[in-house]
Amino acid sequence: MIAIKLLFICSRNKWRSLTAEKIFSSLNGYDVRSAGTEANARIKVTEGHIGWADIIFTMEKKHLRRIKDKFGYLLYDKRVICLNIPDDYAFMDEELIQLLKCRVSEYIDIENN
Image 1: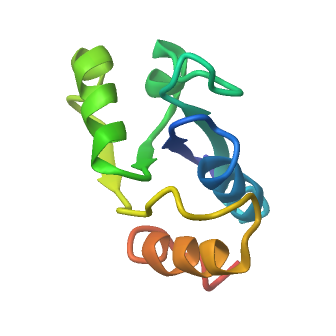
Image 2: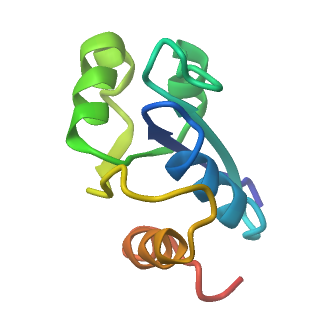
């Protein structure tokens, strides 16, 4: 079975997207990475990330706009989903984890893992 590649994007790749990478990387059948859109991001999103991913989750509409502006030519066959999760949480915040699981479970199977 080929793993479905998930990419989570926020601003600095320190709290939201990194939390998502950590909690979803243990799922069977998924390969998970995260990146940020800001110049000072821990890992800055690149062409390589976008090309690699099967499904891209952004935390906010501004992240979606930024990747469309910069990598729009790579997104034509990608599934890109905005989770609408504000920058109100710290890394591995329990409320953030529950919100991520709830929102992401609409798009991937996290129950049977």
